[in-house]
Image 1 (spheres, rainbow, N blue to C red):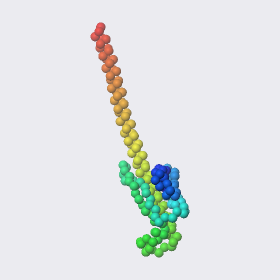
Image 2: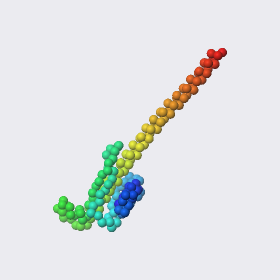
Image 3: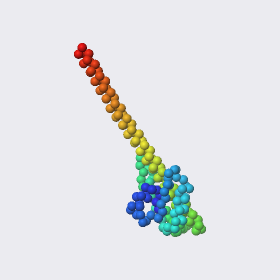
Image 4: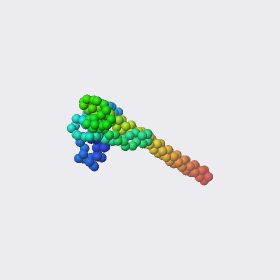
Amino acid sequence: MVIGDKSKMQLSRAVAGNIALTFNQVGKDVPTFADAAAIADLITTSGVEYDSIIVVHNRFVSALSYEPAFVEVLNAKALAESPGFKSYEMEEDVTKDLAEFQLANAVFAALVEGHAAEQSSRRNAMDNASKNAGDMISSLQMKYNRGRQASITNELVDIITGASAL
């Protein structure tokens, strides 16, 4: 299951037969938990059987970098059979709801981290573009001033040679 067009394009080249669901137009705005819950609901109701889901996303590190991160989310059956979970007595519906909430929470965290990394990347790109434009303006201003100075110097030379010829 793939969220986003870029990752869908990349993965469809390598493992096109393994993609069960794709989600587009997610992350255009600031991600909300409602978006993540809707994605988690579609995943759980899709009928695809899984033992665990590994959510892969960009993790925001700093304003200049981000790195890939992996979060494993267990299904309801694997969650109920985990050693730490067996010590609590719960109904089966609670386990199913907890597994779906865990998936929605992991998807929401991935969406938020990805959004932060994208905004940081855009800010850095705009900052670099502004610096490059400033450098280009300085360079063109220097060329213009040199050309203007050369024109003034040529006019002065013409005036002086004309005056000395008289």
